[in-house]
Length: 377
Image 1 (cartoon, rainbow, N blue to C red):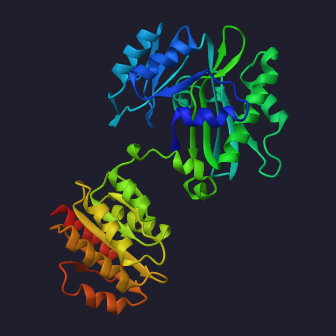
Image 2: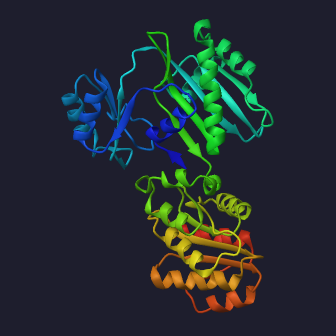
């Protein structure tokens, strides 16, 4: 789950990371009021869960409360990469001397948290990595003892942090680590971390991604979820406990088990097609979850055929068949649907689908081939 900038900064502030003073507003009057309270020049920043806000005109400076209100009027309601801006963060503008980059992220290859820093901030770190990879300094934290002071010093030296700011920079690194771990996040980023002309550090922008699987431990973060930044399909998938990711292909895939789902997607590619989604209904899925999954797939205008691949262990094939029939009653479709049911109550499931307008398959290879052929007709 992605957190908005203002939500991330509230967490960062709990761990001593220096932040610009500010508050969030949903109207131009509120934005003007915050600017008046802060005094001086302010930044008005669109709060949307996407990058490229500055290039889209979603981040602007204002020299007075009246101007802040006018700027907020322009930003509120604008659309950035398909997302409507409904809130802005108004905060004291930083007197920027140098922009730095600092992040902490879970590296799944080494199964460790990796602290990354760069002397160039305010840009996509991927651009720097491609252009000048030697400028990115990274250290790996031991999960048993956490990020150590000597590692923060190593990173500071790598980006030539002024000696006078070494202690403050190490404090930011430590705060970032504690903020991530305490929130069960997989990534926490400050870009840019500003070295002001007054010789202080300031986290001007902030981003955090929280592990969905850990949200049961963080009801406060669960409440921070912004449903307006989810598509209707994503909201329905979350409601029914489905693992769903939209892709760019034409074959809708409904599978039980992440490994089988990946294999199913690979098989569609092998036969010249492309998956329209990753969708795992999980083990023991009942008919209502199956029906919801099929509704989500059929709501995608890019889908040309549907491939249902179920290996019945905990999940019963007749339950899946019942869910398919329920979904087809709720969302009638002319799209070809290829079904492969193998395992628990396989015969019962096949019998339920015998009168339905679906294409039966016995192997994954056959099912993928039939789905790809049907999608190309």
